[in-house]
Image (cartoon, rainbow, N blue to C red):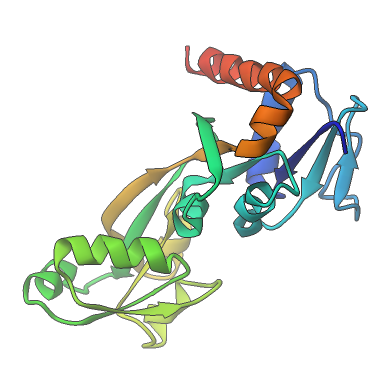
Length: 217
């Protein structure tokens, strides 16, 4: 396609991207929550959206199947970010990456005593770096969902996961014991596309930057 392909995931990121697209004069012709289409047209003939899993957005952009995409910092840290230009923190889909453990578990003492913790997470790379920097020995167990269940059934001592309101943790008798980092979504661009399609991409990047600056003002 000679136009622009933007990779997005369903849900919160898509919803919070709509105002940014509108600022750039782009409106999707379908709602991904109700449409079965994986490629969505827009009101502009030269812009289309591809709907992929959040964790796959960097891969589509890295290999040029999409010219740009929107992905959480958590996803980008796990992916590694090779071959991706990250020009803009969009400040959307904000949350935090945290360590959580059952209420009553003395996490600080366990860490201080050099105990070997079992930690369940889908953020293996980020969790490994975090605990290594603290000198804490951990056995990391990779899970893809329902992270809160792991400590409840004895699979893990703690979890590393995204937390927004903390409601799910509280409902499962867990609590945050450490924040690793704040998370928000980033605009990512294929480096080759930035050179070959700069005339098409630059106005879009400028519109996104303007919308983000306006929202922060």
